[in-house]
Length: 301
Ligand code: SF4
Image 1 (spheres, helix red, strand yellow):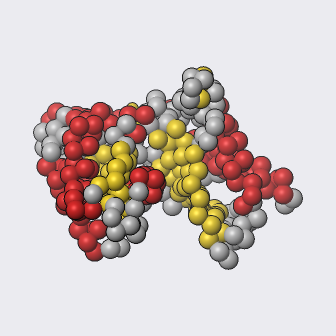
Image 2: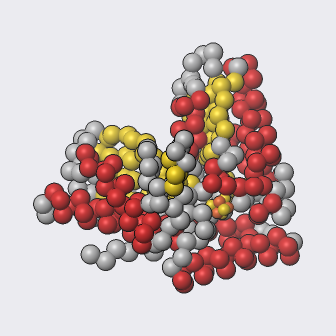
């Protein structure tokens, strides 16, 4: 296949996958929502979960997005240095977003700052947003996709704490933020927490924490313990699905951590809502692919 054909093919696969994730939630999110529903006995709370599942059923049946806010498209690319389309990814992902916006259809949400003009196709300056990691000596490419809704982005917050505040201070920071903003973000929420050196590193880590599978654990034992403590504390707040109360308020808590300056403790929180529309697709050099998050995704050549 010549280069231009490869670029067109990957663009088309990505447009289809982005559109698919707007309609269908990831397998692990659906399973978690089922589990949370089954653990409830309050009729009002059960009715909220049942509405969510009816919404998902209709979205799938009608080929319509699972939420009218199809978000701001964000990508995390983990690309091998030997992947043939490494230098073309940014442009082709931009084209894929434009196609997915027209075909799915997805609501145009992107407004150029200061000009305050909606671009109409979900792209703009630094939109879609992309964070990168290049993996040496690999010829494949993993792309994480995320449709970041407005409501579920609003609780996002980052700060640098005095190190004396410790991990107790970081936990308080997360709990205070979710207590104040969580009910508006369409719970049950996935909570991404970044613990690092500064606001920029902590914020990016907190967003990338939302790409981790539901139920996964931080490899650091103490961080994993903090994930469980925060999850228990957030559930004990009793926010529940759509703020209606209930036993669970979160889909989980994922912490991403990195080294810090001895005199700083950067902490950030990002949130995903019940329609947590993240995806992961992994390509080999010939553009064969697997979609780890969505077993139902197919692509007709
Ligand atoms: S928070 Fe999520 S479910 Fe609620 S409106 Fe925004 S995208 Fe939709």
